[in-house]
Each structure stands twice: as structure tokens, then as C-alpha cells.
Length: 349
Image (cartoon, rainbow, N blue to C red; front, side, top):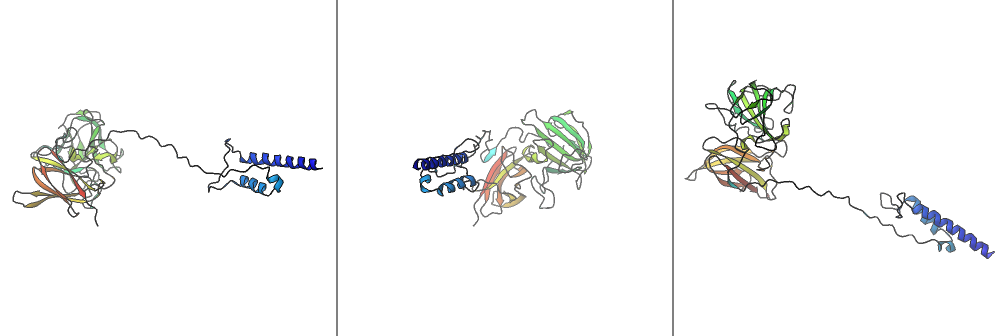
């Protein structure tokens, strides 16, 4: 009778061990106890453990102890960053840049106005009165000849009523787009908007100074003027950079290219900036005001990483000032050169 009882106990224990082992085997073949999303043992495993605990003492001795389950979090593989060339920003001071910077002529001949409006510079809204400006405006009477700013191929000439080049149809009205790729990689595009007439055709090659259209007030223009843009992608309205980085300065003038940033190097958006001319007697005369680029919508040129530009600044000594206490810098402007400068704004208490 004792032998029969022992045999029965052995059979029951063996069956329980097989059931427990089957429960602990994961579908993948791993023998790690399954956990639910909260880190607890899965219901089937817990029931098996509970059943073993409820066995009579002689049978419980025959069930092997269950290892305490542990959850191991294996991080996902992190892709190794691909190295990319980062342009070195010129040091502060006087810079003579190579093409394409300061390499394009003005789109008008004398005696016509050839300087961009200071009241609505690139990356500003004219004090909130207008849309964020993706280019510069040069005012001249309707019919004034518009000239190609550089050698290039005509990408488009005509209306944007159906083929959109801006944020909405009929934004520029009549326009011409040129591709200047012979000296630049990637290509650089110039766009001439609000024309009253176009004088070239798509696919045509034009030399710098070739008449390509006439000033008008088509599209959303409020009056006759040329809207000039420079883009890195012909149809991409969001790919513009500041035209005053590319236009050769007027005779006797230079260009101030500035970065206004915090101590950690982060550019400050929409910060008012003014340029004052200093004379030999200590006098200070306001010359122009602008504001830094907003955080989105327009772009710094990768070479300069600027967020404010003053073009056509007569040679002399100047003070660039912000509204932040002590955030000013004195600088020298020379004809035909860029004055690169940085204003670091200390943390405000």
C-alpha cells in the first residue's frame, strides 16, 4: 500500500512539473518568466506558482523553486550620426567674402533707385504692418527696366496665378526666376516679383545686367516696386536667405552682418536692433533700425549664421545697439567689405 501511495504521489508531482514547465516556456523559446506591461508575472505563471504553493508538503518538496523574475530593459540601437560639413563662421571684424556673397550687381542702373527699403528689411514685418518679408523691396516707377543680378538661366517667366511660387496663387503676379549655378553648389536662385511685364522666356540664358522685366505692382503689391529674393530652391518659399548678403554694396559702402544671441549662443528672435553713426567729436547719430529674424519662416545663411543685416552702410565708425542693457558693440565699416559682429546678451534678472 505504501508503494502504491508513493507511486501515485510521484506521478502527480511529475504531471505538475510538466504543466509548470509548459507554462514558463515563452512562444519565442526563451525560458524567462513572462511579465505584463506593469512588470508583474503573467496570469498563467502566477496560477502555476499558486497551485504549487497549495500542494501538500510531500508534493511541494518535489516542485523545483521558481527563480525570481527580473525585467531587463535593452535600449534600442542608436544610429551613429553621419558627419556633415559645418561651415566655419568668419570671426568678428572686416571680411572680404568670396562668391556668392557680395557678388551680384544691383537690378537697376542709375539714375534709378537701387537700394533696398530700410523700412521693410528681410526677415521683418514692417513693425507688424505686413507679412514676414522673404526678400527686399526696391521702389521705382512702373515700367522701369529690371536687370538680371547675375549670369544665369531663366527658370520661369510669367504669372504665378496658376503655378505657385509663394504662399498662395497670384502672390508675386508677374515674375522672373533665374538659376545661378555656374559658380555655386548647390544652385542659387534669384526671384524678381510684381513685374508689369516680363522680357525673357524659360530656358533662355541671360548675362548679368540683361533686361528681364519691368517694374510693376502685380500680385499683392501695394504700389510699384521690385520684390527681390534669393533662394536655395527655386519653388521653395521657405528656402530664402537675405538678399543683402549677395548684392554688392553701393559705392563707398559696406555691409554689417550681425548675430544677436544669449550667452549660450542661442539666437534671439525679434529683438529690436539699431545702428548709430559715431563722429570724431563723440557725436552719435541714428542711421537705421531693424530687428532680428524670427525663429521660423526665414533663414540665416549657413556661412554667416546671422540674424540681422544692414546693407549699404557708408564707411565709418558705428555702434550697433539692442534694447537690452549694455548689449552694444562699436564697429568699423569699410567700403566693399562685410563687418561681421556679435552681440551677446547677458541673462536678465
